[in-house]
Image (tube, rainbow, N blue to C red; front, side, top):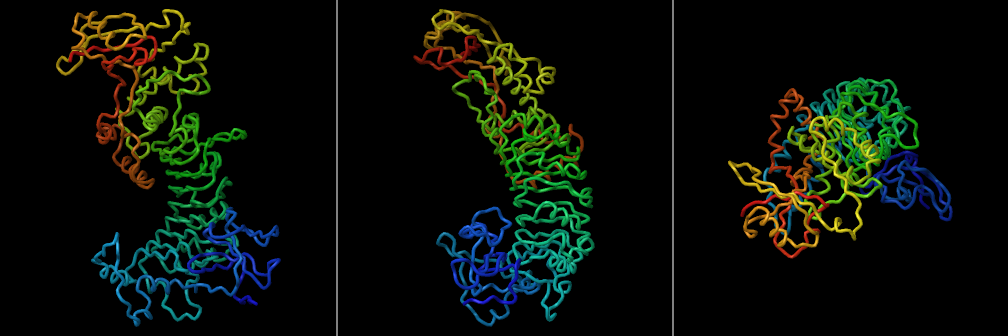
Length: 604
């Protein structure tokens, strides 16, 4: 029968063949003999249940996964935990015992070819100089203690006194006090990363009593994947009196509670809350109390609204200091969300919004009503159109999806947006016009800048009437004069839909006294299209923050427009949509849309 070691405790962290877990239960399991350890694996896909076995719950897991837990025998060999110094020496210096056991050199093989190692010995020698290390990464090194109980090791301050960045992610800590003890000997620590650990009883941890002194100069804290609750995160962050960046992704957060008074509410610049479970911006309302917050990262949550429809709460309003927002890979499916961003984020100048349902399928013209007719040879992709509509709806943006916005980009996008609104208005009766315009807050503003577009509503005609089978055509003859197209003459007529393009050319040639075979017919749709290249995401959110900071250093918006204008000139990113009507037997009515069209004649 397996026996339980006196060292085994509830909450103890263990490693089995490199797989980390936390002991949640010690004892017998119904229907079996002997003792068991119930453990919750850090890798939630590794287990078989959630602490409940055959209808009986033995322990609860922090993870919401149904397969985070397992029962294992106490006799199973466990990986030995290490002290900080022993793990440091093992990784950067090597195992002294292994040096006495020469092993054949292991070659690096890539795609069947042996790779030549150049410079690795020099890197190893430099890393072995522990006293000179400034960045230490002990991710997954089974660190459980600051120092050996016997005290026969050198102190941390003697071994690595120059450390500024420390990564202790995925180790065997169960108390944050142990991390405080390690860092208390690193006076110059600027960044601490403890991702993937499982800290317990944060509010009651006496080891945190001296943390504000230990972390007085630490500006970055990464506690992603620790499954800490928001009050615990706030309590921990309050110990970092100079905190500038907080990383708390993948912690199963869904709603934030109010933030108690803490130093970080006036120092925090960047909050990273990606891969959590927020469904609305209102879930993050307490962050609006952080006056220093400039960058908010919410990638890959489940956000779909500003405020849930069932809530009577007012939309949260963040300070004008918040300039950058990342809500990519969420569930936004309405343009009303985009329009509301300006109200909740009045200082917003940089946005990442790609990979939301509304961005992948803008569907601007279909709001529970018949869509306006569109050309069959549409060249703009959905993301190109979404880029334009986002830019036009948010007048304060300077960058969108990592792409700088020039004055030319903005003007073209806003004209495109106006044309789309006009097309939507044309698709509904005049009595419904107010309802359409209510969804486009910038309509009046843009009309005052660019002029109100023409809205031509097509009358419903009986298809048996001759009028329904005729298309009104305005032909005009254009010639290139000094690099500009100049209108030389204009003619108007009506042409049956059933006529083929050969016949239409013959009519046009007769109207202008030109040989039909020498003219080219170009249908001008009156709409704008983007050229490929709008939605080119590159880099990551940290790159976006650097760009934002650089733009601010460069000064006023006018200078910004001058220095980034080259971005907007990549290959002529905006073009009017027009189509050549090529010779053939295809009927005229299938080549154009609507009952009124404009066609340009050019000489070949």
